[in-house]
Every structure is written in C-alpha cells, then in structure tokens.
Length: 256
Image 1: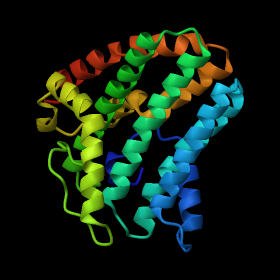
Image 2: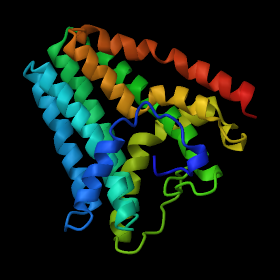
Image 3: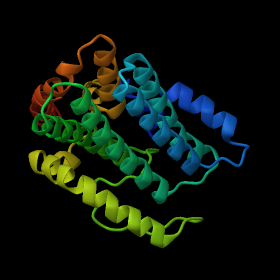
Image 4: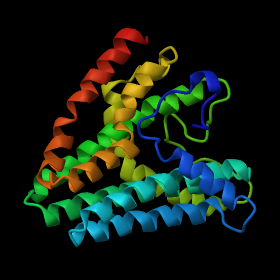
C-alpha cells in the first residue's frame, strides 16, 4: 500500500494482489515497459477471465480474475518506481475497470438465469460500493502527510497534464472518466457529503470499508463461480448494498 504513509496503512482486503504487483513492477522497472503497458495487460487479463466465464471454465476465469487484480496493482507501483506519475494512466486504469466490470456482469447474465434488469442493478450496486471505498480512501490519502494525491476527492476539473503526457489525451480520458463515474460519485457524495471534513479515519474502519474494494469484490465473484453459486452473484451484490448505510453510519458516528 504505497499510497499512504506508514502510520496510516491498514489491512486492505481488496489489495491482495499488491505483493505480485510489486514483484512485477520491480522486474519491469529497468525495461521499456511503461505503466500504460501494464494497464493494457490487466485489461487483457480481465477480458480473458470473461472469455473463460462465457465458456463455462469457471476455475480458469477465477485464476485470471486474480491475475487481473495483481497486474492492476503493478501499474501504479511501476509509475512510482520510474517516477512517472500520470493522469492519463490513472484515468485509463479506472475506465478499464468499469468496462471490465460491466462486461463481467453481462457475461454472468448470459451464462446464468439472471435477468438483464437484475444484472444491471447488480452492476450499479458494485459500482456504488466501489465508489464509497474510493471516496473514503482518497479522503484519507489527501488528508494525511505522505499520502498520494494523484486522485482528488472531487473530480470536477480537468487536471493539468504532468510531464511526459499529452494534455489532449488527459482531457479526453478525464471526460470519459467523469461520464462513466460521475453519477456514482454524485450519489455517494449526496449520501455522505460531510465525509471530507471528518477527522482521519482509523485503520480498523478502512479495513472494514475495503470489503467494497474492487479486488475483494472480484475475489467474491470468482469464489462464487468456482463453488457453483453463479445464480447467487447478482442478488448477493444487490443485498451487499446494505453495508453502504452501515459504513456511512459508522463514519458519521465515529469520525466527525
């Protein structure tokens, strides 16, 4: 968890791919591979997992879901090792995530008996949950000394391109990012508009919130696939929304 100072690090249940990500990044730091190449690679891994899901090879789908989470951790690690922070890479990563999430849920709908409308509600649910995790995590990173500030609490203004990247590319990707994530951000901000004013969140609270991290969500999906619970996946994530209210209530009670 390189995005936080040592005293603010917490057990992130969604970040199990970090050791592999660090290993991969360390092996690529002296090569021509860039963080963008790694982002493209995790996209390929996610699409491969979806292919295996569609062909009913659920164990292989789970393996590539885990691999995707590991590679996903490597692009940011490589950017830090090469000292090449990038808004383009930050937004590309997020856009790839939501595309893969959508295709994954559509694949579940195709293979299972789940209706399209229930599947869309499940997709919306998983995005809202992930948005709450990111909201609190970015607040923590921006409020603590030594925290990474590439991500902003409120993403409403196109950032100025960093050295080595095109402003046009950043502007286009930022527009796409706000288009696909904007509604989820607005909903979560409306549910807990005062969170950014709160005192620093404790480690135990952030570990609890990490149940909504994308890595943990994907782990649960892969696990349910391998044990034959494909029909349960979408209803589970819809019901999982109850934790949104629980987490926001805890935040308001303990961290004001």
